[in-house]
Length: 207
Image (tube, rainbow, N blue to C red):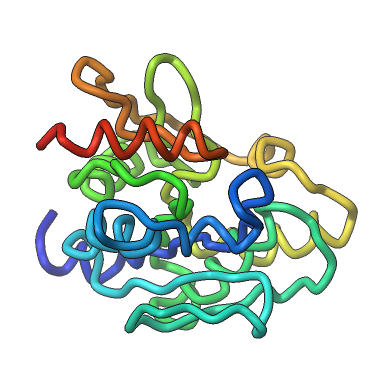
């Protein structure tokens, strides 16, 4: 990815999960590899984008990372679409409608270091509106590259009651970029203490 293209992409980490199956303090605060999960994800993607921010549900959440924090625009709990909408709003603020935002969740500590590059190449090749990551034939709807121009459409659909990512993207051109799981699944996600313990064992695997 050349410098000009990199400047058109920003990265947003969705950190709004409550972590109710962990300790209820939020997934992003979980200790991992001498850091927190948030710090781990940030380290995986920081070199891939010209700008990175963290999205949380409300202003009462404290984020201990030296990046901009953005908040959901929708006050009611509507799931991941709220974070995606906030990310698209920030994408428009940074790069306008012609830019792109790569959205990732905070509970995926092994994100590939070529994530942004490959998603962007896929989008250009297929002229897609959204590109989702895929591994082991499984689609990861909270990991993907979005065109900023989808913001207004998403606002309209949320206000109409749409709550699922695939229900929204069904109206647009979607493509998928698949990663190998030969060594490990780069999109392994942490939902409970068992997942967290397994991830700590997997950290010994180097890229």
